[in-house]
Length: 295
Image (cartoon, rainbow, N blue to C red):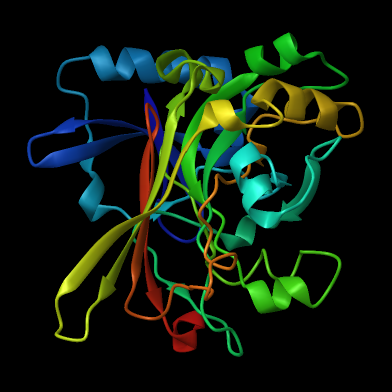
């Protein structure tokens, strides 16, 4: 099953399950996001029953205001330098432990939401990544228990403001610019399988040529089997210090091919479009706009 969030009046977010509709994907609403993760097993069972029920009342996805299906209080923990090929392109040694930094949930967006380039930046850098949504309370667990506690996976783009990131030894500012965390629908772990088996991670950029034509290019083409630390290892490592709760989000690092390491460096600028697609998981796409898009 695949789950999304949407705003059902005001600013409250409801979690729904994606189903086929007559004119495209539709959404069966389930519960407010906090209630959904407070009793995840119940709502997953309810979703399965609703999907199989003939005539279930689903709403066309295109008529909804989609939102990340993540609780406002969720921790968003990201791993830096977690692919061997990416470490090689940076010239840095392989880390002994996962290098973790945080995002705020307010930076998260959904497919199609414009991402503005902050003032003073040459552009935004792409980082196609696998997102992991926690589905159980994890406190001081081993790797097997950590994997058993995964609810699902989603495509993520860790869009980065490199100048801001590089002006401090802490990455917080450059990793939390407005609308810089596009998150795709969540596919459940039982449907997706295990990323250690190797899922292809592809990032595509579309730019406009001088003659006005569109140019599509694959800028990242990696595989989750290249991770230095597996999903289970990272979740277990975090759980020794921080108790993880259902709805928390782990972002697992990016493969080789980021823009800032190129010669010359390359960035996403207003008018560009970027898409992250992960095998067995799905995709998320983002148009890039100028700083006026922060309003």
